[in-house]
Structure formats: C-alpha cells, structure tokens
Length: 481
Image 1 (cartoon, one colour):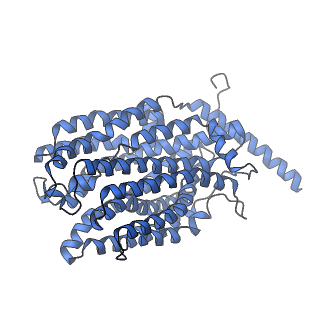
Image 2 (cartoon, one colour):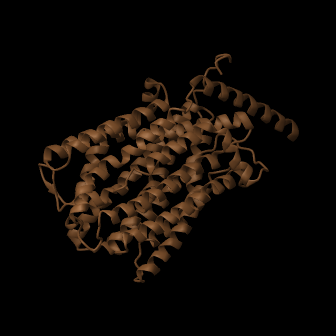
C-alpha cells in the first residue's frame, strides 16, 4: 500500500460512552462465569469429588477438543444469519445468558452419583453449556468489530471491554480467598461452597452479561448465501488472524501446566512477612500483588500502542519480558519472605504488558476483518471471533490433558491435603509452575513476528470501505425510491 495516496484515518465518534460502559460491564459478567467454570471445574472434580485426576484430564480434554471443533461452524452460522431487525449479533446477548447461567450452576451441584455417573453428567452439562456459551461469546466479541468502522475507535472499544473482562476475572479470582473465609467462619464444606458460588459467579455473571445488549451495531453486514464451508474457507485470506491464532495456541498449551490452586495449596502456609496465609488466601494475595500494575496498565493500552509503534509491538514486548523475568523468578525461588516479594515484583512487571495482549489481539483481529471485507466483500465477525474460542478451547484441552498427566507423573493424590503430597510433587511444582509457560512464549514470539501491522494500510482500507458502503447505500435508496 506504500504507493497509494495518503489517507487520513477515521477518528470515530460512533460509540456512545454509556453504551461502551454497558458493553464492558457485560463482558465483566460473562468473564465471571467463564473464569469460575474454566478455573475450577477440573479442580472440583479431582479434589472435591475425588475423581482420579487422569480420568478428569482425559474427559475434560476430550470435551473441550470436541467443543472447539464446533466453534468455527457456529461462527460461520452466525455470519450467515440475520435477525428480523437486520442485526447479526446483538439479539444473542439477551436471549442466551439465562440458559448459560443455569447450566453453569448445575455443573457444581453434587447429586450423590457414582464417580463415573458424575463425570458423565458433568460431561453432558458442559456440552450443552458450551454450545450456548460459544454462540454468546462469538456475538459478544464480534461486537467489537461492528461497534465502529474506525480502527482507532475499535481499538478503544477493545481496550475497555478487555478492562471489563479483566474485572470479571478478578472478581471470580477472589473465590479462593472467599472459600477459605466461608469455610473457616461458617463451617461450610467444599461441596456447599462450590455450589453456592456457582450460583453467584455462574448464574449471576451471565445475568450481568445481558447489559452488553446496549451496544449498537454500527457496521452493516449484508447477509450472504454462501455455504458454511465457504464461510469458513474465507479465512484463507486472513493471514493476520491465522498467525495470531497459532501463536496463542502455542503459548496457551503451556500457560498453566500446574494450575495456581495446586501450587499454592502445596504448603500449609506462606509467610508474607506481615502475616502468614493459608494456600487459598496466599493465591489471592499473590494475584493482587502481581496483577494490580497490569490491571492499571490496560487503561493506557491504546496510548502505549501508539508510543511503541503498534499493537504487534505490544505482543512481542510482553512475551519477551515474561520469558526473561520468569527465568529469573525461577532461580529466585519462593522459600523465603524476601524471595516471595521479589517474585511478586517481577511478575507484576510481567503483568504490565501482558495484560495489554488481549487488547492487541482483538484490535488486530478487528482490523483483519476489514481487510477480508476489502479483499472479498464479506464481513466475517462470526467466524473470526469463533476462532478465538476455538483456539482457547483446543489449547485448554491440550493443557488439561497435560496437567492431568503431569499431576499423575508427580504422584498427586487428591485424597490428601496438598501440603502432605510426596517428595516428587514437591520437587517439581516450582519449575513446572514458573518455567512451563516460557516454552510456549518463545514459540509465540517466533510466529507473531510474521504478523503485519501497517497503519497506512489500515487507513487506506477504511477509506475504500467507506466509499463502497456509501455507494451501496445510494443504490439501495434508488431501488427503494
């Protein structure tokens, strides 16, 4: 595009502040639900219901792998369908949340069945949950791409909905501390605690997500008559999306080979100097100390992107910093108060650019949808953002399988308190917890280097698409006259 005449980018003005806020709140609600289900369902089955970790790993990984295959099909169906009012995405945001919320709660109710019957029941509930959740998720994130025809304004929308999503994850992330508090104060057993907070975070989060319906679709996406296969095959034109998806997969499969809950419950208590906390509370304290700077940094993601030369640069910087500081943290260790604070400080630095990565991914994906429309005349919000779901789930499936196998290899016993685990578990927990993610992050950087992030190209494509839409509108006016 370097030979094209210089084009002034569209500065926006399509998104109202109140609608953006409602959209962000909706993402907070949805992520409360997702964080609780994705973060605790494996643990609930293995450590509360006492089902063998290897069995849970196999079942949940198979479930999520199958779910992930459905996502591109769901995305293509969303792209093909239009509601009577002409909208493509928004109606899903009010119809689906109550159903998803009820299924979220049911997965954490213990009906007193045998271990195998319980796994089968949760398996069926999860399949239904994921079917409806996938459609909602495609619609929720697809709204970023249709919120505005301006890439600059879409970047702002990406930033604020990422803040909302992060807030929801933080709220659900407090569950471990809440669990310790209610268990100690009220004497609730884990079966009760998990069931109650499945209602709070599962059903409650989904009902809150309905506020995203206030966001408007500002980019018209005409209905097409192509087949589902043809809709999926359009992705061959979207090199940016395919590269981001591959990079995210490689990074995600090693992101939590030993989940936080297992590491922090591996000791009876952690000494933070001013106080000693049990494993659950320590996990939350660690998360707050590590995550606060990164959470604040998201508010400046678009400005930082401009400073460093684009969203692609944020991705490379984030992973590079994480690789270096995780390696240093491994050698620092966690056996003393000083070491814990050094690791918290290093991980806090990691979180600053890392928390901006989702903003960058969504912004680049939205821009790539414009590129595909420019090349093919087709808008692909559904299939493009379903790939985000696909990658999350297929990577999660592999990650869960690896976690189950690793826990089995290091002799984890769910019938014991975690701090009573054997020497093999205690030897390998720290290197797996801290260095496991580095493997995927190195591969991520290699792949993301091939992504193109050209500001002038974006401005040119936006200008051309604006002209096309104006011509189409004029033709429709003549036909209807």
